[in-house]
Structures are given as C-alpha cells and as structure tokens.
Image (cartoon, rainbow, N blue to C red; front, side):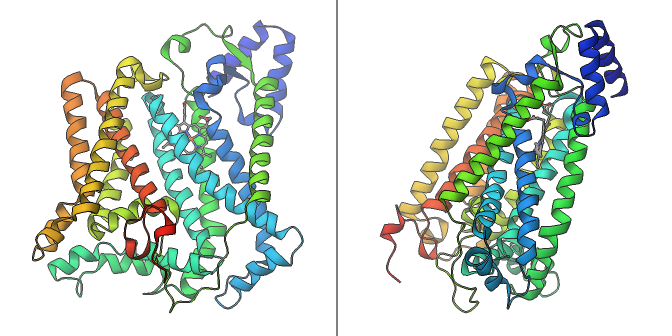
Length: 464
Ligand code: HEM
C-alpha cells in the first residue's frame, strides 16, 4: 500500500499543486484516509459496483445507531422483552420509527449483501490477489445472516419464537442421519448444535440471553473488524477491480482524486440510503404479533425469509436440506477463487460474450429443472408417496434438493470439459445454485401454508 500511495503522491505532484493539496488533505484526515488519494475512473462507473459495498457500510451504520438507541429501553428477559418492545413502539417518543428503521435496514443489509456478492462474482473480482478478500466476504455474509437471525428473537412475540424454534430444529438436522443409523443416544451432533444455539431443547431464557449477547456485542464487533480488514485489503489490492486494459494504463491519466468526486458520491449514497430506509420506516411498521406462547405453535411456523429456501429443502429431508446442501454450498463459495484462477477475466461482467451465454443457459435450465421437479412433487408426490415402505435413507439421498445439486455439479463439469475454462464452470455452478436458491426461497415465502402444504395464495389457506 505504501508504494501505491507513493505512486499516487508522485502522480499528484506531476499534475500540479491542486492535486498535491488534495492528496495531502486525504492523507491528513482520519475519515478520508480510508480512501486511496486517487481512484481509477473505471471504479467510479455506477454500473460497475453499483456502490453496493458502500451502501452495506451505511446500512450497518444505521443499524448501529438505531440499535444503540433501542438498547436504552429493551430488556432481554423472557418476562420483560415483549413489553419493553411494546413500550418502544407505543410509548417512547420516536421509538416506533427507530425500531422500524432498525428492522428494515437489517433486511436491506441481507438483500444488499447478496447483491454485492453477485456483483463481485460476475465481474470476476475474486480472481488474482483478491481471493483473500472474497473469503473474508463470505465470512461477512455468514455473520450478516447470523446477526439478523439473532435479532429476530429479541421482540419475543409469536413470530420471533416460532421462527427461532424452526431455526434451532434446522440446526439439529444431523439427527435425521444419526436416528437412521440408530446412534443418536451415543453420538448426537445435531442435538449439540441445537443446544449450542439455544442453550437447551426449547427456546427460553438461555436462548434469549445468548441471542442478545451475540446480537449486540459479538456479531457487530466481528462485522466491524472484518469490514476494516475487507477495506484494507481493497487498498492493498490496488482499489476495486477493473479490466486488465485499464489496469495497465499509465498512472495519472485515468485516475481521479478521491476528494471531492468520490466523497460527494459517497455522501449522496449515504443520504440516499438513509432516505430510502426512513421512507420505508414511515410507510411500514416492523411486525409485532402477540407475546410468545410456547404452547401455541404458529401454523405455518416459518423461519426468517432468508432461511426459507433452506426450510423448503428441509421439508424434503432434514439432513440433506439442513446440513448437507448448506455445507456443500458454503464449501463451494469459499473454494471459488482457489478452483478458478483465470486472472484474465478480472473486471469484465460475465467474462464477456461466452459467459453471458453460459450464465443465461444455466439460469434457464435451472428454472426449468427446479420448477418441473416442484411440479412433480406437488402434483404426484415423491418417493415416500409412491413406495410407502421405502427407507428414509433413500429419501435423504434422492430428493429434489440432492437431485438438483448433483445435476448442477454435472452441468458445471460438462461446461469445464467443453470450454476448458474453470471460470465458465464456476459461472455455471454459481448461476444454477443462485437461481435455485431464489426459487426455493420464493416458494417458502409465498406458496407454503399450514403444514407446509403448497397453496397459490394465503387466501386459500384453510380456516383454523
Ligand atoms: C458486511 C458485509 C460487507 C461489506 C460492508 C462490504 C464492503 C465492501 C466495499 C465498501 C467494497 C468496495 C466497493 C464495492 O465493491 O462496492 C467491497 C468490495 C469487495 N467485496 Fe465486499 N463487503 C461485504 C461483503 C462481501 C461479500 C459477502 C463478498 C463476497 C463473498 C465480498 C467480497 C468483496 C470483494 C472481493 C471486493 C473487491 C471487489 C473488487 O475489487 O471489485 N464482500 N466490499
């Protein structure tokens, strides 16, 4: 970074004293110094990064500020939690809007973190020396989801209680396998995971205390530290990625001073992010149902929306949907930069024409495959409906989730064989898994009703 800064400073002095003054200003100011003195013109193109990483940072800032205010009134005890949230909404002046902003910024962060991951992947920005930052990013993604999930329980209403109960059952998914093998009494990793998460067999005070500590201290601190490393790596890697042609441009002629252009852009993004969250918070209230009642389950009991894709898979098989597929997916995400090392694709959306074609076919094929499997399953049932005596082991191995995963891996291997390109293979697998995740999540959100049956709309749910 030092040598790059020196280059930047040298470039600045070549372009005159105004540039030199701007560079000194950026280097002297604590907040401005996060930036390199000069940024490449390509990095400033709105349709390249869409400012998504920066928006993520601002959403996190909103969460910290509103979260600290909420903490003044919130009481993390099973007896008091619900009433304290009600007080925040109905008694504390401005409490409702602060709570709404916190809730919607948190949901926004989940959506934007996925969009950012998609942008980074499709522009090949994990390639070359950026592989470490990709790995840090995947850890940030996991922590962002956990951070959201831990906050979900805090209002202690029916929605929170049953969503976390479902989440904790998903954590215990390994039990399906250990039950099948008859070893659960001696070896119960699923039960261990569940107890680790909620501190017992059912959601209660230990779970609330754990989730509170995770939500207000450990997870935000981890995001803060890792984001710091993430930003530092971006500077070490010479700014955000760009195609090789512009990377080799002579210093100076393709760069802008971070002050003022980038700073104004960032200020606009900050104001835009706050304005959007504020508007949504004014228009829509964060949900708050009745106080949690452990003896009255919600039906359907749904996990938070970002885990509904997994819940859908768990309804096929707990072990493969709740453990096997998520672990394989994370292993795939972490390994992408180490399997695909074709540096020439850095900074080019979809790596050019061929990539657009490959990703388009992968998306279309996945849509067709997953929708037709869902159609068969919903209309005609699956293995257990056809062969009632079948062993659970077969259902675990052969269900729409495992079948899709196997076909995606096969498709990506075929693409690698046809194109001799690991980048094209990665594009195929990433696109297939991402589109499938979207479909399963959409089905979980909109088309599952009581007893996890399929319904076209909640209006058709049976009256309970
Ligand atoms: C809390 C979550 C995150 C924050 C606050 C964050 C922040 C940022 C920022 C500010 C940038 C530079 C501007 C931009 O590209 O928009 C960036 C770039 C980058 N991010 Fe993230 N990020 C997060 C999560 C992730 C995730 C989930 C991934 C992928 C797994 C990721 C991988 C990267 C990479 C590789 C770059 C460099 C991109 C390039 O060189 O073009 N980040 N991030």
